[in-house]
Length: 248
Image (cartoon, rainbow, N blue to C red):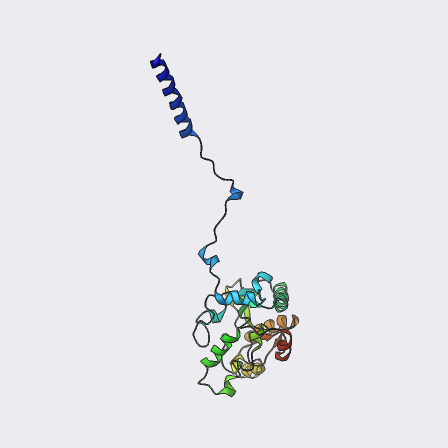
């Protein structure tokens, strides 16, 4: 009897163990799986956090077809230093970003392979001081033609100015504007274009490319300036100081 009982117990244990081993391991439903953000997604620099906190918007969220290459977040600028750190997105006040979107739509509707490419948008006042100080070897009256005196303020410091060009996605290159961005000299001056053309320093294609940019920006409500083909204002400095906050 003991032998029969022992055999029965052994059989039960064997079946139980086999059943446990062969039981499939269930996975949670896919919809319940969470994907952790990458390190890159977690890295938002202090400057970007500050701009968001001050109520500015990422222009590419407003108008995804606009391209951005922030020159002050690289060393490809007039004084060869990165002053924006981790910042790679261009920010503007909501209504200025909306106007820029109108310019982008206008450009693409006219020439589908062209895109606006932004080099600089809002520029914190602290960065304005850095740029001003970087040119301290240049007399103040000349320096003001290229960088606004931070004691007065720049429209960039209110998010009411933007620096940009046009990119041809079909050719994978910027349109030839006759000079690079942030070029110091008469070749960059819209008011000197006809003179430079007569002297053979600019050609008709370069001026026509600038005119495409000016045309879509003016249609959207931006104003060009006489000394930089890439710079456009959405309002006057006096009005900006009344209607917008200084961005720190």
